[in-house]
Length: 344
Image (tube, rainbow, N blue to C red; front, side):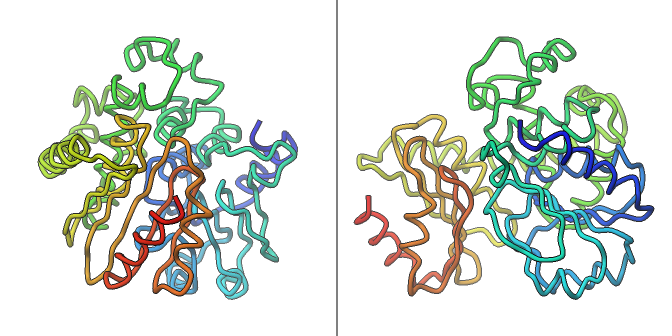
């Protein structure tokens, strides 16, 4: 149980009582699947993907001015600045599973502050609210490395997408058709925001996952085409990463690469930690004199280590216990690595 029945009804009431909602959501599968469930339930509103930062600050006030919403829903975003809340002058509903944080004048739903204190992903909470589009909910949850309690019902409705009773999300992600779909949705969110928005619009109209997997509709073909284009970049990269991992002898697998256009750090680190669960994975992408990193571990709580290693350095980081993001200046990266290895 992520949020209570009372909280579920509160979110439904918030949706029902608005006419022009603005949805701000994270640029991963959990984020978009959260948005899609609430948008398809409501049938109205505008979705804006948050690609440049892990928090909602005053820079997003221009979206409020542009769309003039009567309510804002923030989905799977780890932080919301109080100044944005105050300046937006619109009721805000924040559904997330990071943090938690204390903010004023906002309705905040987070399983980490519930009596269960768990880490159900945002797409699971949106499933509790919407109770439709089970394939979208399953995609978002499993992509976030979470096995939802409705997975057996999903398997009965879509037996081709998960062919066996897998016990771990990684086994589903890398061995099933649902895993293929998870990868396709991840790749459709890469690249220019204008192209991403076209794919999100197409995704909002998909009625069955086979429209994408088997290219059975115009919208499905659009998403599949984007996936194949991005996969041409990813395939040689993951091959190089796996070769690096095989040669690695220490506790850490470190892979650095340069790319100004497309980030694969999360995709690469997830695949690597699945194949090397005894290691700690750091994938670092160099862009504009910064290192944008994804860190993964199957056993060690990385979040407090990352926070301590960043003290005095020019950067920021955070996320979950076993999956963290990190962004710091290139000239500070080696010092971060030295501290990180020392703390291990």
